[in-house]
Image 1: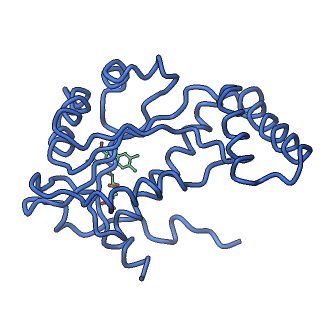
Image 2 (image 1 turned 180 degrees about the horizontal axis):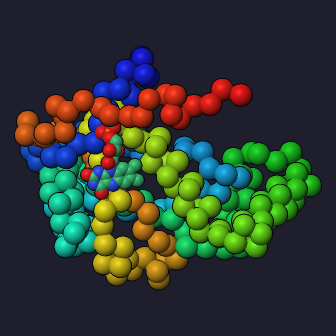
Length: 217
Ligand SMILES: Cc1cc2nc3c(=O)[nH]c(=O)nc-3n(C[C@H](O)[C@H](O)[C@H](O)COP(=O)(O)O)c2cc1C
């Protein structure tokens, strides 16, 4: 498989064929990509809401009104839509959960190694919270790594996709009671298959030239 060709050919789908559905087994593979995404100190600060039926997509589309209305058909005509959320804060409870999962997965040879991992993580979280002063921004950066991974994976799987940052955060937060769950909404992702009418499928890709973005030291 030529990953560069995948990168050149994947694109942001602007209109979906509502009659086509991603096979469940293939969708589950994409969810595994999200689960396996790397994150700083393996903090995994994300949670995903999955809409694979009309009622669920309608709930998401409530946040696609006003200046975001142009994104609503993408959600409604998609096969699956995923709302990427990020933990609003990194709690002790979350740190314990990750540590225990590391333990269950056999990462520690003894109690000391486990303690070292616990202290190391706490140190980083303190640094981002107190010295850098924005633990939420750091956490959300990790969620966007997962977005990047699934966008490429979808291309490899032959599935069309649209990352959507244009949605009303307050409406989606209220609809899904995100604050009560300690979450903030980060980004939407629609998945499915392009419509024949998708103007964007026919447009050439546009990127800055390499001289603008790379500096050889
Ligand atoms: C975080 C993020 C948010 C985006 N939000 C939207 C959006 O709300 N609506 C939309 O149509 N495209 C959205 N896009 C798609 C970008 O416009 C697109 O990725 C960019 O123009 C590059 O084009 P390509 O993906 O076709 O290569 C978003 C992309 C990213 C990464």
